[in-house]
Length: 215
Length: 195
Image (tube, rainbow over all chains, first blue to last red; front, side, top):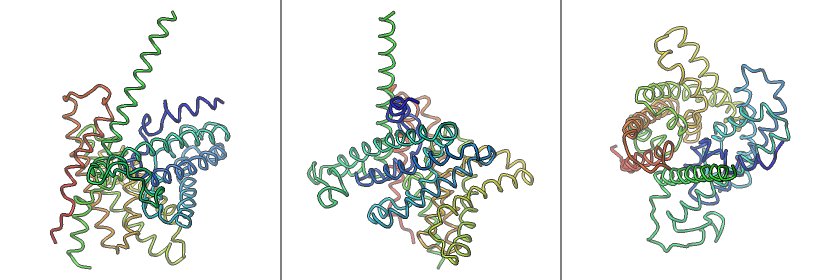
């Protein structure tokens, strides 16, 4: 078990959103204020850890043929718990995320990790994998939120700071409203993924060059 | 309930509040199976079919099972089970009765279980308090909206193969940017109200 590698995978080399391209719906839809992004990221991380642990625990019991259905039931159970907790304690978050909290059930990241990792590895490793992948997802959400909120609305920390309004950085009238609209979601994510592809390729060619020099 | 309310639901689901481009439901299949026009059309039709059926069955389950038993909080679990079972049955039924349609839709059907547009439409029906007919109309027209978006997107993507763009945008990023432009075009429909 290699904890450092797992975290590096989750955050960069195997980032669920930017490299594996999973869970697009929520990333595009809810990243308009920092509050939404953190709320969604933490919910998904908690559900991912719980479902990874339970599925890893049951990996020898679940029959091969109906494993997907079994995973979905486990995931749906945890999603319902988180949904009810958010409705009870953070009604504002529940209002602004709306239907996207129950839709975590069909978020491909969670099912993907269940199938690719938790069904084959020990409980502790699965829990760490859940945490690492969840943090990777949350970080992308936060980056998307900060960019879209700053350029689209001119504020930072909407929903949390300054009584929910956020701190105004760009004066009113200047921000490009477009970025908070659906178009902005597609554009920001596209540019972000392009940047990551560029950076990964660059570090790869650099690695090759240093290898050659070493030889 | 009048015919105009039904028409405005249909118009909303197809154009103004398009499931993919405005609501961001069903992005995974939208990106995954939009490389070719005919596969995109196949996926779209399969989604129309399953979304219609899912609206019917989840409405019945909610009205006659969950609400009377006071289990409304189990909605998400119940709906996803209904959808998974439904997709499985549709697959078996089509294989036995209409093999040609089954062959056309075959590979897309299992993928639909994890399409968030299907679970989304079921949850939105309940959230909006739609009655039976409104739910079914919303389900089918939502699926049609999905089809319109995915077919448009597939035709744009076919052209992209001949386009020049920075190397870093290769593959997914350029697809996202072009999807963004289509969504920008669909924003022109916002506020559209005929009735």
